[in-house]
Image (cartoon, rainbow, N blue to C red; front, side, top):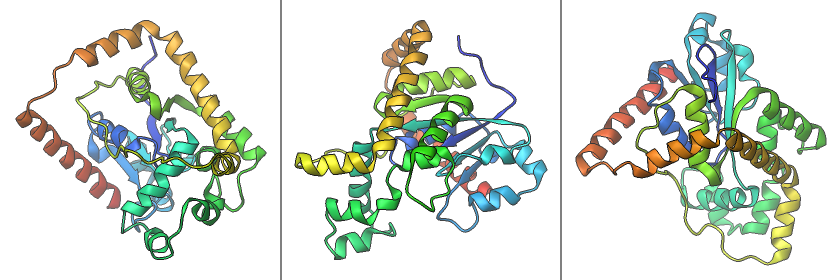
Length: 278
């Protein structure tokens, strides 16, 4: 049985496009939303920089810090903290990011991609500094230069020493069970959110190879994370099997129950966001 963490805060390092939205909705049912600080790098108030300047008393009360943040936030939590994250196949994440931007008119890059007809190859060049994003975020940045071997080794070290669970998007349910067991969560009814379909049309092998080369550190880190998950699942085989059976046998709630759950969940989400901005 995995040991339950009680005193430390939880930090969810949310790498974009890795099933983090679904996990965030589950997190909101585990803690008082007023004790969750959601870092949003695109908002003036709820930024990582502002979080670091909050009164120590407020930071000490927090049970969870989450968002598109880089490793190192734990240094500003006097009560101590442990991390979780989700990794995703870097090639799938690259395509998912590209098509997500095309679908989101409010994204900073949307107009450039649409107006200039930026294709996959041009997008790869345009975002060269942002490749290997999973490695850089977990290494702790800063993003002033392309990812390198030193960052990769630092990311592996951080995953080993500071992350209670390293999940894999493609094995979301198994990852969730490990996380829930580690922190004493009750897994609520949930549905996968922002799951894009058909994001990866056929591309020529040369193009795919260029994407792989540009994300080679993320690919290595992803394989490292997959092995870590496999080891954790093997150690907790009985727990995983029992919990999986319970989840799969659970009846899907009726329409009224789903509506009530969604409404309450939206309220918890908004309360967390508003509190973080105050």
